[in-house]
Image (cartoon, rainbow, N blue to C red; front, side):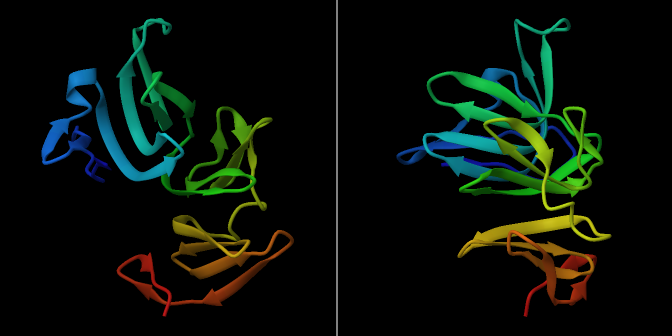
Length: 173
């Protein structure tokens, strides 16, 4: 089990072993913040803005908006956006992320992108005139909550399910 936070201050990730908690990120030199954690098989995908050590980069640090932690191979960057990543979900087609960005790893993507075996690409043309706050994939449909309401993508078109805004966050009712 991993826990994180949505603070802009450097806040650790914690891992639970039985009845004990370990400061998982500090022991590995990781700083930054998390907006969401996703389980992907034996790996964890961390959305947010992380900085972690690397012997392969010129300054010895990798900056990543989407990071994978594999228990067997450690930290790896999956993508960096031109703004921030707020939410994500794993679908049969790949990892879908949403937030306030216009590109991911240099690929144009307006707030919604998908990582497939072929790399990153914009997903569904982005949410119409809105920024994703949260998402869930259920029964083959991607549902995205944003300030303008809850949008659903059926693989061909967006429909708005309900517009209910509370304190800048969407809420389905």
